[in-house]
Image (cartoon, rainbow, N blue to C red):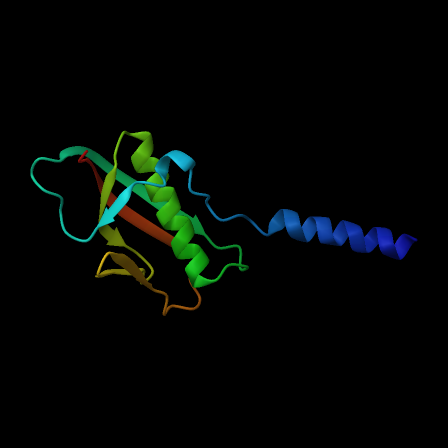
Length: 123
């Protein structure tokens, strides 16, 4: 009985310390990522900084997704619908493959992904 209680407490502690990935808000799911600066008719709203920290449990793909989600959430919060990445740290490479955005997750020991993006309202 004591062993089971100790194992349960350890499991709860492990889950509590594992961290979470930034979730994309439903309002931000339509924020577009563009690989070139938007057309001149788009209104510039400012810069946002998205990030995702690693608790040691997340894959590179999860870190990338969390940082992009954070960036999109912040862009939507200031009224944007389009983001253009200025910088991305820790080798988060973003390139266009047709209409898809392709992420390069070649770095295996990243502790945090940081993105700086310009936010526009284009619609």
